Image (cartoon, rainbow, N blue to C red):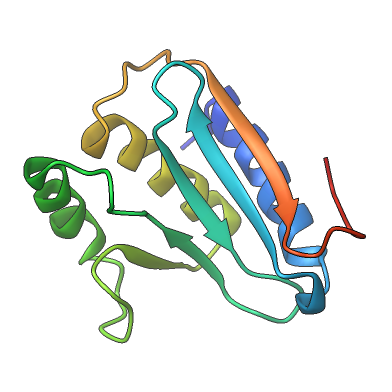
Length: 125
């Protein structure tokens, strides 16, 4: 299955994330430019790639949709709103599904991809 243009951009950001040393605690945020609804990824060189859906601003219905979608991530060791991404392509596809099905964004929503680290001396933007 061919990746969408947005998924291609997410894949590129996730590949850079996976090349960043763990000591910088890198993460990627994919957010809608209008609503600021987002998903985030964490991981690094040598660490697994994890999709994390912050739930503090989800409605109860959106939280239910997220739990249903992400419970099928294949790993019972992860919380309900987190997914272990086997590949960067899989992570990009799940991110788009979450944005469309959980956050109910339109198919052509304008997305912003932020690449950050938790250490100020190693910014990737």
